[in-house]
Image (cartoon, rainbow, N blue to C red):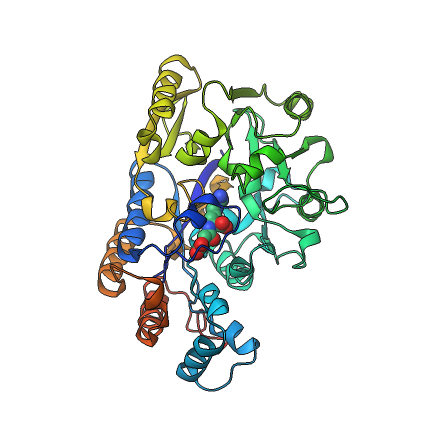
Length: 441
Ligand code: SUG
């Protein structure tokens, strides 16, 4: 029996609004706002707790070292930690903001995951995302690799693809796995924004290439017959759908998406039908532009809801951001959907507003990992959200996290020292191993 576990990124203590992601409208619009890392981390933790309380398997991935000293040193700044901190702020303030981003919280971008039943060696495969299109995110991959190896010691964790725009890869945010109730096999859908050989005309960056997706399918040993590629529409990218998971979500045999999400929706549907032949009947829930205009879909992040099967329920439940309720059109669409649809029959709301202001909704915050019953037992215990880890993390957040960070506060050396003391303590709470954060110093 395969269940989908969710591993959320624990939100780091330097969470701030630096407007680093061009093409991500929320990140851009909220540049310079004062952030609240304490509230952000608690919102993320409460979301995890809620998922665990409703019976889902909930995991936690630790935040990364921020500010990221190895990169500051790599750029030629010399001296002890305090000296490189001061000198990099003096000479390269625009660079420095990148090293503070708490962006590893968006675990959907940590890796692409293929369950063991889809892979030719019957092992769970994960490929760490290189995030090569965004400088502040491209430095996540080495720590993500160590983190995933630790959490899934039994799995084949692949290092990130070579970090170049040609192989730009943003992980599970551009990947959906569909399956039926009976067969173990599923269909894997890879969504890309551009072909690396063709010039892209999109105003905003297309952050996933076809070549990256294709490489992952080879490395995971997926069946060609059960693999589908689809191109994101340029219109969606230019409207602010920087990842496909901003306009599409799938679970079990259901794909729920906006009419304008893909370049060729008819082809997408027929390719999925062909790939699913003999194992399940796909269900497509397409939301028309006339029902919810793309702009409302992106502002409310409706499609960045998680679509989950709660144990004991025959149907699927949407775990939506509170922002859906703020948009009358989207909220009333959702009410009608759950009342009239046989597949998605319930909706829960979660408050992840601090993350949302940087363009990260409920689905961005988690990496979905389908696990069979044997694999569930092999997950590193310290990565599983238990009552005791939940309460330790809550105390830890209350002790270490600030309630305000303004752009200017990033220049405060105490913020670096506070962040490192917090990570030191987390090393112990999650038994990460003494070299987890500071081995590269
Ligand atoms: O990569 N925002 C993230 C949001 C990622 C959302 N993930 C998914 N859709 N799966 C990004 O654009 C903003 C950081 C800043 O501006 O400081 C940021 O990186």
